[in-house]
Image (tube, rainbow over all chains, first blue to last red; front, side, top):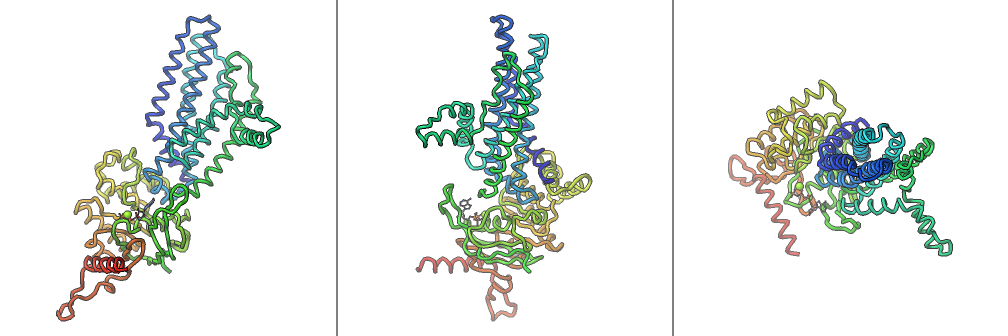
Length: 253
Length: 259
Ligand SMILES: Nc1ncnc2c1ncn2[C@@H]1O[C@H](COP(=O)(O)OP(=O)(O)OP(=O)(O)O)[C@@H](O)[C@H]1O
Ligand SMILES: [Mg+2]
């Protein structure tokens, strides 16, 4: 267990200095800053668009960072064989997975905090106040990216980065459509029905986290809902992570 | 009791779908004794690295068994007792020498003054003290190898497994490594290393084993296996290890092709 902390610190150090992280942060910073260009709308509309744009930018940062960062992290350690040297020290494969996932989630958290600060700064200049609903939206986005991270990590243990990215992206999109999948399930065709129902059950339901639309319009989301969604993402992530550990233990490196 | 024991150890590398690709090691039976220096010899691709990785629990045997100090090699409690220097430097290239050693020291659970002292001492031994703040990506090949050894020495291990420890080193560096190996033995450390350089193995090893196409074709103490060349001379001279090695492999080759 004591191996996790040094592994975590080193992984985080690697992430912090990575071009991907820095470029994405800069990219989102410019995206947020450029939301000022929508001045040709009425004032209320302009603020709505800035909020929409801001939440979208933060979501994009999270997804892209995990998709292109985490998908390559473990494969790179295996490719460079740095994992061999670590495994001949008192650290297990599970320690490595825990440390890597935590390092990414921590870097994500730091990134989100920085962006939230900038986002609120811009909103304050425009609106003259701090809309608490935006914070709720960002919390939900963080929980969504957490689930997405465990998905990416799961694939990265088995597949090459390219395949991991393709699969994760596919499931990300499918995960936004699960409600649709469920409604699509046609009772008459049993095979098709069970397939769609099965997919609906296994896939993470990313739509649960997607409250940006109503939050931007000023419709509140209860803390109870956020709490329940948090429990959902924690449990989903946990189960997937345990599966990942089992899979990685058996894998030949 | 042997400190490392392999029984009928076999490794067949498989592809992604689990289809067999290469038979790298066949039925290896080997016992390494506490405190000895054992040299694993053999041509390129004969399975030396595979054998070492199996003994470290880095890869899984297809069949057969490995035990280290009576435990399975993946046992976490063994890890602080066995040092491994891989054939290339498998260390983080973005860390510098002291950061690297501090990282591995922390994995071992070392802290504070103890950690600092060990890092300083080891950097001195391998001669990287002056470049300790340079990131490993800027290191030359020989410097990287020294770093690999530093990572092993930091542990003060009971067993050292070194995969071609002198490859890529200048003659002085190679000499230093040989001295370090000898010193480890004097301190009671068991050393298992692979090499191609027979002149290096000969003065160092208590026993050697020769792998050929994944099979152990010779093993024993040098005094037992090297044949006495000329009985007539007053001072008996033995063949060199190099002569023995070539003879053994050549014999193997002819038998191999005459079938
Ligand atoms: N990961 C792997 N996947 C498939 N085959 C492998 C793998 N690693 C090694 N092999 C094969 O196993 C055989 C033995 O390789 P190994 O690296 O153990 O040889 P070696 O004796 O260490 O050689 P060298 O002296 O060149 O280092 C070779 O035929 C090699 O191609
Ligand atoms: Mg080798």
